[in-house]
Amino acid sequence: MTEHEDKTVNRRRLLRRAGTVAAGVAGSTVVGAAIAAPAQAAPGDPVVQGANNAAGATSTSLTSTAAGATLQLGNTNTTTAGDGTVLARPALRLTPSGEVLHGDSLGGSIGMDTYGNIQVVSEFGGGKYLEYVHTTGNSNQIVSIVPQRLVDTRSAGSRASILNASSTTLDSSGRLRDGQTIHIDLSEFSYFADALFGNLTVTTAVASGFVQIFPYGSPRPANFSTINYLPNQVISNSFMSGVGYDDEYTDVISVYAARTTHIIIDVVAFVIGVGAVNPGILPFSAGAAARGAESPEQRKAKRAAAAKQQSPSWK
Image 1 (cartoon, rainbow, N blue to C red):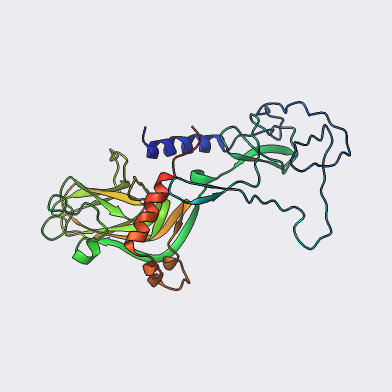
Image 2 (cartoon, helix red, strand yellow; image 1 turned 60 degrees about the vertical axis):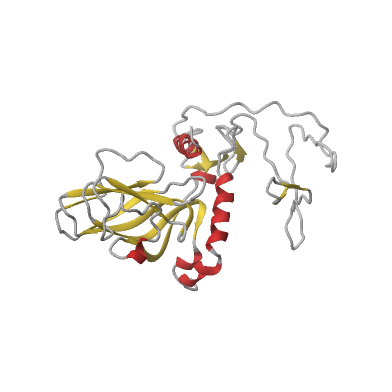
């Protein structure tokens, strides 16, 4: 199984788990394992630094009248990764113990399951619900951008983002050929995006056909079209597509044409989880010139380093 497939499979599993009800309004079945028996300790004993501390069956409260934070944790110990990057040690760790939350947990409780997912208990309408705080590849938001032209096969300059442009995939005028798929690099605009929203236009088609847009690295879907067109018709359609990646490129979509046609793709928003959108294309930004702050070599090095870190730690 590839790294991309690993991420997809685990993301789907977590999404299926996200709506699990811990204890519903009508007293639905409680989910999760029972809390382990409390450790025994004398209430009132001080917390000893550098040692394990057990509070027994009592609660521990920490209050302060200081102007700053009541509790501040820090860890000055570091380790060095294989590429020489200095990594900080964690200052806080939630230790999993099965499904640590259950229907008797108080609203607002937080814990971590054995998959490394953060869980919270919400309480409303007379019931309690076990929910997941979506993290890493499972967390996302829609980020609107200043509309950007991604590719226009009518112009050689607007075909620069096509990774496999050749006489096989494109005809002499730049049209996407019959039965060919091109792969378009989005990394000037996004960094590990999950999906994008855009508008697809086709023009100067030689015959009736259709275009498919789908995530790079995924098999081309059957019985699906992003747009259908007639000969020499100019027609547009909005679309949403997942974004794929590999060891070299973080953000790529694939475009297939059943019959030869020019294509124009404009992007209006991205779905972002672990990644980001280039600040230069955000509304009210300093301008698209911000994309030139890094050289292509620097961006490529960043993408390659990040791709190595995207393998899920949970199975």
